[in-house]
Amino acid sequence: MKCSCCDVILTTQEATRRFKGSGEFVDMCGKCLATIDGEVSYTKGNTEEEDEYEDEWEGPSGWRDS
Image (cartoon, rainbow, N blue to C red):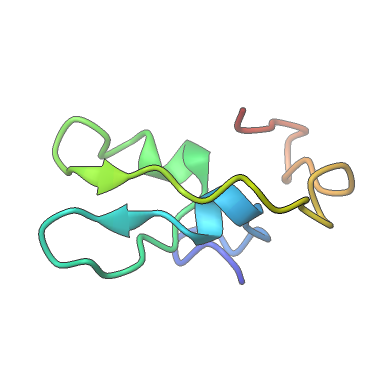
C-alpha cells in the first residue's frame, strides 16, 4: 500500500492506522500524517507483524518515520 499524499510505500504500522471517528484507514506515511497530526485523531497501527519493506524503503530524501 502507498501513501495517498506522496506515494511512498507504507510500513505495516502506517498501513494499519485508522481514524478514530470514522474507522477508515489513514493511508498516509508518518511524514505526511505529521502535517495534520494536531487536527485529527487516529489509532496506532498494528506493529506485531514483521514489515517486509521496513529496511528497504527510506523515502525520496532518505527520511524514515519511526
